[in-house]
Image (cartoon, rainbow, N blue to C red):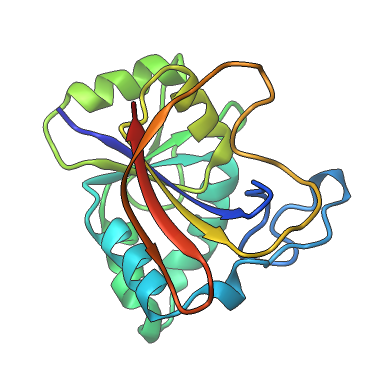
Length: 195
Protein backbone atom coordinates (compact mmCIF):
# COMPACT_ATOMS: atom_id res chain seq x y z
CA UNK A 1 0.00 0.00 0.00
CA UNK A 2 1.26 3.45 -0.90
CA UNK A 3 1.88 5.95 1.87
CA UNK A 4 0.91 9.63 1.93
CA UNK A 5 3.80 11.79 3.10
CA UNK A 6 3.04 15.45 3.86
CA UNK A 7 5.78 18.06 4.16
CA UNK A 8 5.33 21.54 5.61
CA UNK A 9 7.51 24.51 6.46
CA UNK A 10 6.30 25.92 9.79
CA UNK A 11 7.16 28.86 12.02
CA UNK A 12 7.78 28.43 15.72
CA UNK A 13 4.24 29.71 16.34
CA UNK A 14 2.79 27.08 13.99
CA UNK A 15 2.14 29.20 10.90
CA UNK A 16 2.47 27.54 7.49
CA UNK A 17 1.18 30.44 5.35
CA UNK A 18 3.32 31.78 2.51
CA UNK A 19 6.71 30.27 3.42
CA UNK A 20 8.42 30.74 0.06
CA UNK A 21 7.49 34.08 -1.51
CA UNK A 22 6.34 37.50 -0.26
CA UNK A 23 3.20 37.42 -2.42
CA UNK A 24 2.52 33.68 -2.20
CA UNK A 25 -0.57 34.05 -0.01
CA UNK A 26 -1.60 37.41 1.45
CA UNK A 27 -4.97 36.10 2.67
CA UNK A 28 -6.08 37.87 5.84
CA UNK A 29 -3.53 40.64 5.28
CA UNK A 30 -0.55 38.32 5.90
CA UNK A 31 2.61 40.45 5.55
CA UNK A 32 5.44 38.03 6.28
CA UNK A 33 5.56 35.90 3.13
CA UNK A 34 8.92 34.34 2.32
CA UNK A 35 9.90 33.70 5.95
CA UNK A 36 11.40 30.25 5.26
CA UNK A 37 14.14 31.11 2.75
CA UNK A 38 16.75 32.36 5.18
CA UNK A 39 16.59 29.10 7.15
CA UNK A 40 17.34 26.81 4.20
CA UNK A 41 20.88 25.49 3.99
CA UNK A 42 22.60 22.35 2.64
CA UNK A 43 21.02 19.81 5.02
CA UNK A 44 17.48 21.13 4.67
CA UNK A 45 17.83 21.49 0.89
CA UNK A 46 18.99 17.85 0.70
CA UNK A 47 15.94 16.91 2.85
CA UNK A 48 13.64 18.69 0.38
CA UNK A 49 15.34 17.12 -2.63
CA UNK A 50 15.23 13.60 -1.17
CA UNK A 51 11.54 14.03 -0.31
CA UNK A 52 10.62 15.24 -3.79
CA UNK A 53 12.83 12.75 -5.64
CA UNK A 54 11.63 9.83 -3.50
CA UNK A 55 7.98 10.26 -4.43
CA UNK A 56 6.07 8.07 -6.83
CA UNK A 57 3.59 10.91 -7.38
CA UNK A 58 2.37 14.15 -5.86
CA UNK A 59 -0.86 15.22 -4.19
CA UNK A 60 -1.40 18.96 -4.63
CA UNK A 61 -4.00 21.46 -3.60
CA UNK A 62 -5.12 24.03 -6.17
CA UNK A 63 -2.92 26.91 -4.98
CA UNK A 64 0.21 24.76 -4.74
CA UNK A 65 -0.56 23.23 -8.13
CA UNK A 66 -0.88 26.67 -9.72
CA UNK A 67 2.38 27.92 -8.14
CA UNK A 68 4.27 24.77 -9.15
CA UNK A 69 2.77 24.59 -12.67
CA UNK A 70 3.83 28.19 -13.31
CA UNK A 71 7.40 27.58 -12.16
CA UNK A 72 8.70 24.01 -12.53
CA UNK A 73 8.14 23.44 -16.28
CA UNK A 74 10.37 26.50 -16.88
CA UNK A 75 12.86 25.78 -14.10
CA UNK A 76 16.47 26.84 -14.47
CA UNK A 77 19.31 24.42 -15.11
CA UNK A 78 20.29 24.68 -11.43
CA UNK A 79 16.80 23.57 -10.35
CA UNK A 80 16.58 20.44 -12.51
CA UNK A 81 17.16 18.02 -9.61
CA UNK A 82 13.77 19.14 -8.26
CA UNK A 83 12.14 19.97 -11.59
CA UNK A 84 12.73 16.58 -13.25
CA UNK A 85 10.68 14.46 -10.84
CA UNK A 86 8.03 17.17 -10.43
CA UNK A 87 7.62 17.51 -14.19
CA UNK A 88 7.66 13.81 -15.09
CA UNK A 89 5.78 12.01 -12.32
CA UNK A 90 2.00 11.87 -11.80
CA UNK A 91 0.35 14.79 -10.06
CA UNK A 92 -3.11 14.47 -8.48
CA UNK A 93 -4.79 17.82 -7.86
CA UNK A 94 -7.59 18.59 -5.40
CA UNK A 95 -9.67 21.49 -6.69
CA UNK A 96 -13.29 22.55 -6.92
CA UNK A 97 -12.55 25.26 -9.51
CA UNK A 98 -9.97 23.88 -11.96
CA UNK A 99 -11.15 21.91 -14.99
CA UNK A 100 -9.41 19.26 -17.07
CA UNK A 101 -7.31 19.07 -19.07
CA UNK A 102 -4.74 20.55 -16.71
CA UNK A 103 -1.84 22.31 -18.40
CA UNK A 104 1.05 20.74 -16.49
CA UNK A 105 2.03 17.39 -17.96
CA UNK A 106 1.03 14.27 -16.03
CA UNK A 107 -1.44 16.23 -13.87
CA UNK A 108 -5.06 15.25 -13.34
CA UNK A 109 -7.85 16.29 -11.04
CA UNK A 110 -8.98 14.08 -8.20
CA UNK A 111 -12.59 13.15 -8.90
CA UNK A 112 -15.41 13.11 -6.33
CA UNK A 113 -14.73 13.17 -2.62
CA UNK A 114 -11.05 14.01 -2.02
CA UNK A 115 -10.62 11.63 0.92
CA UNK A 116 -12.16 8.74 -1.01
CA UNK A 117 -10.04 9.52 -4.08
CA UNK A 118 -6.82 9.61 -2.04
CA UNK A 119 -7.76 6.41 -0.19
CA UNK A 120 -8.21 4.75 -3.59
CA UNK A 121 -4.82 6.05 -4.79
CA UNK A 122 -3.18 4.62 -1.67
CA UNK A 123 -4.50 1.17 -2.61
CA UNK A 124 -2.98 1.35 -6.10
CA UNK A 125 0.50 -0.02 -6.79
CA UNK A 126 3.31 2.50 -7.02
CA UNK A 127 5.57 4.71 -4.97
CA UNK A 128 4.56 6.91 -2.08
CA UNK A 129 2.44 10.00 -2.64
CA UNK A 130 4.16 13.20 -1.53
CA UNK A 131 2.23 16.33 -0.55
CA UNK A 132 4.37 19.49 -0.38
CA UNK A 133 2.58 22.46 1.17
CA UNK A 134 -1.08 22.23 0.15
CA UNK A 135 -2.17 22.87 3.73
CA UNK A 136 -5.93 22.73 3.11
CA UNK A 137 -5.53 19.37 1.40
CA UNK A 138 -3.24 18.11 4.19
CA UNK A 139 -5.80 19.18 6.81
CA UNK A 140 -8.47 17.17 5.00
CA UNK A 141 -6.17 14.15 4.75
CA UNK A 142 -5.28 14.42 8.45
CA UNK A 143 -8.99 14.63 9.34
CA UNK A 144 -9.55 11.35 7.47
CA UNK A 145 -6.44 9.63 8.90
CA UNK A 146 -4.83 9.38 5.45
CA UNK A 147 -1.44 10.95 6.28
CA UNK A 148 1.10 8.24 7.06
CA UNK A 149 4.04 10.54 7.70
CA UNK A 150 4.32 14.25 8.47
CA UNK A 151 7.63 15.96 7.74
CA UNK A 152 8.05 19.48 9.08
CA UNK A 153 10.80 22.05 9.06
CA UNK A 154 10.21 24.26 12.08
CA UNK A 155 11.92 27.61 11.61
CA UNK A 156 13.06 29.73 14.58
CA UNK A 157 10.80 32.65 13.70
CA UNK A 158 7.47 33.89 15.03
CA UNK A 159 5.16 35.72 12.61
CA UNK A 160 2.36 36.49 15.05
CA UNK A 161 -0.55 35.08 13.09
CA UNK A 162 -1.53 33.44 9.84
CA UNK A 163 -2.77 30.10 8.58
CA UNK A 164 -1.85 27.10 10.66
CA UNK A 165 -1.75 23.45 9.69
CA UNK A 166 -3.90 22.14 12.52
CA UNK A 167 -7.46 23.27 13.05
CA UNK A 168 -8.70 24.81 16.31
CA UNK A 169 -11.28 22.06 16.64
CA UNK A 170 -10.50 20.65 20.06
CA UNK A 171 -9.55 17.25 18.64
CA UNK A 172 -6.60 15.47 20.21
CA UNK A 173 -4.14 14.13 17.61
CA UNK A 174 -1.12 12.17 18.80
CA UNK A 175 2.06 11.73 16.77
CA UNK A 176 5.27 9.82 17.32
CA UNK A 177 8.62 11.42 16.50
CA UNK A 178 10.66 9.05 14.33
CA UNK A 179 13.47 11.34 13.23
CA UNK A 180 14.75 14.84 13.99
CA UNK A 181 17.73 17.03 13.26
CA UNK A 182 18.67 20.60 14.02
CA UNK A 183 20.38 22.46 11.18
CA UNK A 184 22.93 25.27 11.27
CA UNK A 185 20.28 27.99 10.84
CA UNK A 186 18.50 26.89 14.01
CA UNK A 187 15.63 25.19 12.17
CA UNK A 188 14.53 21.71 13.20
CA UNK A 189 13.66 19.05 10.65
CA UNK A 190 11.34 16.46 12.15
CA UNK A 191 9.43 13.44 10.91
CA UNK A 192 6.30 12.26 12.70
CA UNK A 193 3.91 9.37 12.20
CA UNK A 194 0.42 9.10 13.69
CA UNK A 195 0.59 7.43 17.10
